[in-house]
Image (cartoon, rainbow, N blue to C red; front, side):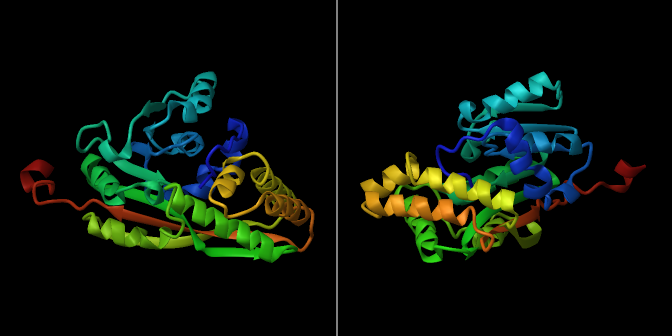
Length: 277
């Protein structure tokens, strides 16, 4: 999940948040005839990355501004099977049985009522269609390198801020399998993948981005408002990230919980002998 207010050029986002990495658990369930909904698509980088795997893909998000760069990209590259619309996952603006697959990446942990979003996905899926969801789980954070206690506190404060400001539930990933089971899905497969930062370039990029968070950002301003960090502590944390980003001892990984479930067929959906003849 990207922090509120983070900005990433779209061409970079296609690499940093590639479908091959962030939607690899969905790809085996897609066909070139599939109609896919990316519900809560955000910047649309994963949406665009999945275009070559399906017949059509629609990115849905509550903010048109979020996916404006993606719209410009698909227009410039003449990617004809991708479009974006404004809407909410709590009331998906499509008829029942409109899609063969629905992706909810970094979505369910942010919803006020995740069960409602799962129910909406169930409604718009065809029988046999799949819902794939992924959520980060801060219980699976792995961190090594200098200033470890300071940087672990940074993530603890971020978790508190997400809870206080209603941004997200930082440890909701472990609940995804239960959410889909409660929503009527079957053949549910839950997995976890650690996304790692273990090269000099990745560590430098990640550390520099977190250092910027400690300066002028949602994280710094809300930390001060809620009195979770002082100005001097923010400066110390910024310096810690800067030093961490240059250290050969640094390493970081997040656990991402992912789940795929299938909408079951009913007796009305099973073809008869006459239908098959």
